[in-house]
Amino acid sequence: MITACRPSRIKIIPSFISGHSSRNLHRKIAGKMSKRVLSIQSHVVHGYVGNKVATYPLQLLGFDVDPLNSVQFSNHTGYKTFKGPVSNEKELATIFEGLEQNELLPLYSHLLTGYIGNPLFLRQVGVILKKLREANPGLVYVCDPVMGDNGELYVPKELLPIYRDEIIPLADIITPNQYEVELLTEKEVRSEEAVWEAMDWFHKRGIKTVVISSSDLGQPGVLRAFLSQQNGPRLAIDIPKQGGKDLVFTGTGDLFASLFLAHSYGCGDVATAFEKTIASLQAVIKKTVAALPNGGDGPIKAAERELKLVHSKSEIEKPEVLLKAQRLN
Ligand SMILES: Nc1ncnc2c1ncn2[C@@H]1O[C@H](COP(=O)(O)OP(=O)(O)O)[C@@H](O)[C@H]1O
Ligand SMILES: Cc1ncc(COP(=O)(O)O)c(CN)c1O
Image 1 (tube, protein in one colour):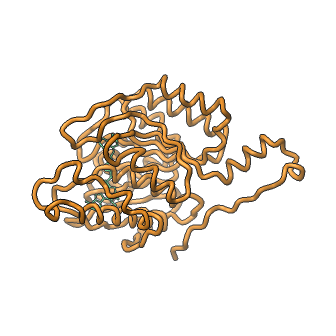
Image 2 (cartoon, rainbow, N blue to C red):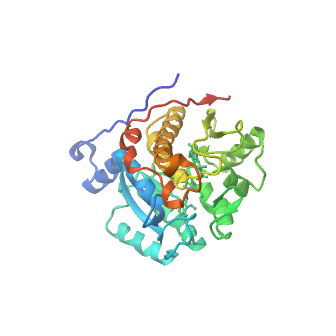
Image 3 (cartoon, rainbow, N blue to C red):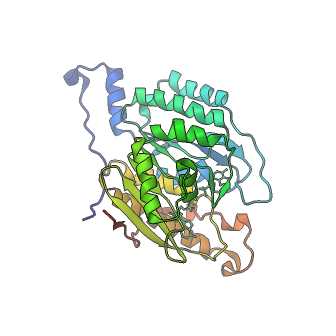
């Protein structure tokens, strides 16, 4: 039976009882009760991907979010052009140093990473993670290895071996799409058997929870998402495709990672977290499709298919689960 998730219990022990110094106590309490995400992703001035799509849902679900931008672009892919700077590893190290020197690291319960456009910046994420875990050993790292979609790479190819060999093995939860799984495992994933082999490939590298946010392995017109937990359930959810055949949404992968982070925290039941994540995504996409010009007929510009995120407040706060997870083991 699927049970509802409850926030983890908070236990505050006064320092005169525990004998801890106030700083240690602060650290201990902060590590236990804090719901604060350091979110390293892209910033776009217009539109909803990266930190622009992750921050609001996390906040609505009770998390403080500290966005650290890996790039600052005018907009995401799919538009005529995009402009803007990509941050380098020195800039990342400097910003992080500021957080460290102000003794803020124990406050983070989560590190979330998404779109990163520079290989050395990605390598620096590994350095940062080590320090965050020293400050809070219970920190959860959710890694969305954003590299591409549908056979097309949209980051420099040098990121791939760094994700595969250095960053992914440090993650607790990963949320790749089907193409990213193929890149990382260096194997085609064209059958359900291949999905579970790929899941095991990740589990062998120490990743507890792997979620493939979408795949084309469902029936025609149906996306199939998969979740595997090490020594735990193997789950799948079938998602009827919304919108026309050629309509693609951007930012849905990033939204998926942020929602799954929120719903899985303090929740032993990953099936519920998986279902709630997909429920909110479907509601956001439904609103987006409903707002398309001419009912979605004819060519749709990138700006017209931006996710209707802000208008989906209640669907994010109270997801209505219509698509149930199937347990496969
Ligand atoms: N056309 C669509 N119809 C319904 N749901 C979709 C559609 N596109 C994306 N989604 C939702 O977005 C989630 C993330 O999928 P996707 O956007 O393919 O990931 P990524 O951006 O990582 O490739 C899926 O789990 C699904 O819930
Ligand atoms: C700047 C930027 N950030 C993030 C993404 C990831 O979007 P999605 O969630 O659709 O994978 C994209 C899409 N190419 C992008 O252009």
